[in-house]
Structure formats: structure tokens, C-alpha cells
Image (cartoon, rainbow, N blue to C red; front, side):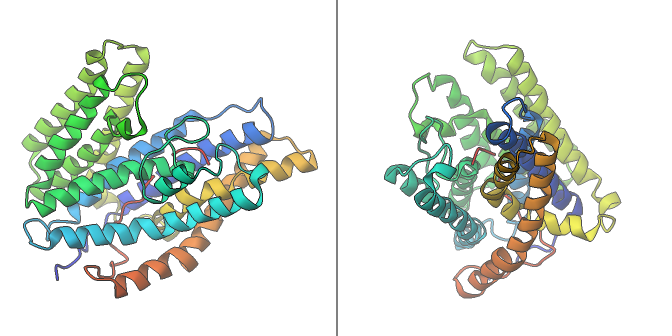
Length: 362
């Protein structure tokens, strides 16, 4: 049985918590504007937290699978570990959303009892919701649709005993370029044709650098990705100021992760324990905040206290505390039980960096 890595990255754990917090803040401003006071503007900058999550995911997959590459059963270990890490908590959160929709339909916005959407939601497959958006029943699960797609590609690479960075690099590039040919009236399955998936490759490239320390390879790969980010908007003939802003955002996120990884010698052992803990709990924070945060503006509206900053503050503080408890008493126990009982899985070391999938509406 291949051993799991013991590599510890305090900087990455901190970045996971920061990314989740950015998403929570953005959604909390959205909930306050939708349910408390329509004059409250949504703080969109926090959406970058999703980008950070995707880059971290690629990084972690690269540094945590070295012992699996080239093994006959490596793909089985990788696939099972990803399922154990991702599926249980997502299914629990989705079921809570479904139960709420059945019991209190008036309390749930942007969702309806659509059997097709519900079934595909549990399977991590894309479908359109009542608003026409490609989102599952649990809105934030749209990012997991991309995560599971990436995991599938990575699993196939291990199954074929191909070098993951080359196999994933080719496949992800093809799908990123495919956005040019997607057209306006595209089916949900075409959601994978999106340049956002190149973030996974960015993370893999930086992860490879931690292993070979080759700045030449790092520069070539990053240069290639930057060229793709710049070329794709131009290829579809709709290059605009918005595309320039996206390009800057893409490069900024890539530079941020690289800087955090390079700074690890300075960060290791210096990050407060609670921050590292919330890095571990960031998946629970991400999944459950859309189920809990909207309650705050609803309550404030009932008592007539329409104060935007108070709603956002209470939402953020409340869901952080709730996520810490959910991780401690639900996520971690369930994960440990499954790791101990299922085949091709072994309990993860607490020090091992694990990815936290990532933003959408509730």
C-alpha cells in the first residue's frame, strides 16, 4: 500500500482559510442585499477565493500523488481518497438543502424541486437551476463539478501510467480553448469548456516546482499558461476591458500561490493554531455557509434592524464558528471512519495538506 505524504504547508492551509473567508464575505453581502436591504451592494472581490481554491487543488494533487504515479493500482488509491474527501460532506449539505426545500419552500431561493437537477447534483454533473444557471441544488457545488472533472482527468492519467502534468496539461488546455467554440446557446455539459480550469494546471506546475526546483520548467509552463489566458479571449473575437481584468486576476492568483509556497520556510510553525485548524475546516465552511449565513439577514429583517455591516459581520462570525464545530464533530469523524473501512484508503496524517473545494449562490 503506497504511503501518504507527510508534507506540511502552513502557508497553504492559511490560504485555504483566507479563500473560504473571501467567499463567505462575498455571499454574506449578497444575502444581506437580497434578504435585508436591497441597497446593500455585493462585494464581488471575494469571488477570487474560488480561483485560489482551484489553484490549491492542482498544487495538492501534484505533491500528494508522487508515490502513486506509475503504480498499477495508483489510480484506485487516488480515486477512493478523493471520493472519501469530497462526497460525504457534499451529500450531507445537499440533503440539508433538499430537506429545507421540501419543508420550507418559501425560505429557499434560486432552487426548486426538479428531479433531474437533484439527481445530477448528487452525481456532481452539470445541470441548470430554476434561474437558468448551471448550478446544482446546493449552489456552491458548481465548483465541485469542476473539481470532480479535474479529479477524473487525474485518475485517468494514473490509470494510463502517464505523467499527470503532461496528460492533465493537454486535456485541460483543450477544454480551456474549447470555450471559443461553445457558442451562446450551450448545453450544461459544455460548462467544462472554460479557461478557469487552467487554474488546476497552474497549481500542478507550482507543485512540480517544489519537487524538481527547476525554474526553467516553471517559467516555460507558466509562460505557456499565461499565453493561453491572453489568447483565448482574442480567439473568440470579443476581447474587452473585462478580459484584461480577468487576465490580471489570473496572473495575480498564480503569483499569490507561488509566493506563498516560496515563503513556506518563513511561515512554517509561525501561523496560529486556530488558523491552521480553520484551514482544515475550510471545506465545511464552504459547503455549509450558504445554509446558515442567510438566516442572519432574515432575523434582522424581522426585528427591523436593517444594518448591512452588522448582518455581514454576524453572518461571517456565525458560520466560522459553525464550520469549526461541523468539522470537529461531523466531517472529521466521518472521514476517519471511511478511511479506516474502505479499500484503497488510509487515514490521512493531520499534517498533510488536503484541498478544499470551492463559489456560487445558495
